[in-house]
Image (cartoon, rainbow, N blue to C red):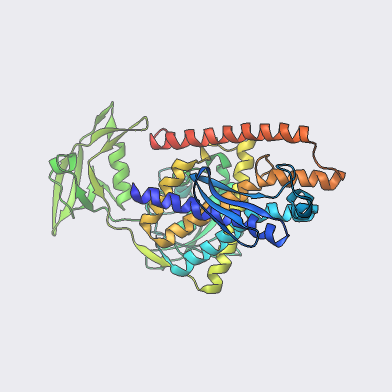
Length: 456
């Protein structure tokens, strides 16, 4: 809990400071006087004046944002000798540059964070597959347990090397959003017997791009041997006599290829609301034993499944993903661009009803992911920071009042008509923008709570 809270506060602080510093730095470069640079809103808990203009740098009590307050005749009277330094007196190009500098700073930060994560390196699951789900896209494509996915291509000519399972999931997600099939170069676990398979992802739509996407495709957890891990005291596994280290060979006469197949067998061992008896054949210290296992029934978000109260599977094979200086920087730029496009596509499809509003996340989900990534290591946390920084940069560029993109739309109108938006329309648009943002925040917070309660 403490780790999650600290990781969340660091995330918000870093992203807000960088965003507002972008506004501040360009404003100063354009000769605009900055009165206050605030991290957070509400009551000031720390302040200090700095710089030739005496800019007040403050930290406020509510750390969910920030702002830069500039000299502006629309907000307060300005002395005649300082009017040339007021924001509203600046040429249109300078005002636009100051506004766009905040989102641009977030996108630039994302490039650097992604690159830094690549330079440090992360431990990620190898793209070694478990048996695909029955009748799934992956099974129809011919993927099998133990397949190692080495590369991906959309046209069969330009191939992208896949260094980990995360790379594979990213390629699948993008292909689903673009509505195109994906070809995979696959070998066995030793890197031999190469072949090409084709995932017909056109059967899915953008509405399916959520946390359950890989299950829709038919891909589960990375390959793991069907070995019993930690066994809970008093659970069905212990009652049946299973021990840690037992290798499960067959269940009800069916040979098991991996831990994923065993988990699926257990999940499905329910009939009429009760666990069905199962006959397990296990190998223990060179001997083959047969045991009767009776799973208990568990309600998984409205779906009744079987459980044996034991960790199933050997440790997943991991690979170190690390890149050199130039390659890491190039990948950082590519990933920032791809995520920006992905974010805009998802927002557009949510707007026209082709994607679910469940994809919106709020502060609770961000805090949860911040804590999880921090526990996984610095590389993962930097990648998470970069992801949120991209989202913040792109969302702030949306043409909505109250956001930077809304101000840019005002300037576009001014540039096309030669006159600024009237005060009456500014007031109406601001009110509408506040209402829309509150609605979006309410949906995001509802999704957060629903995820925590297991309703999504």
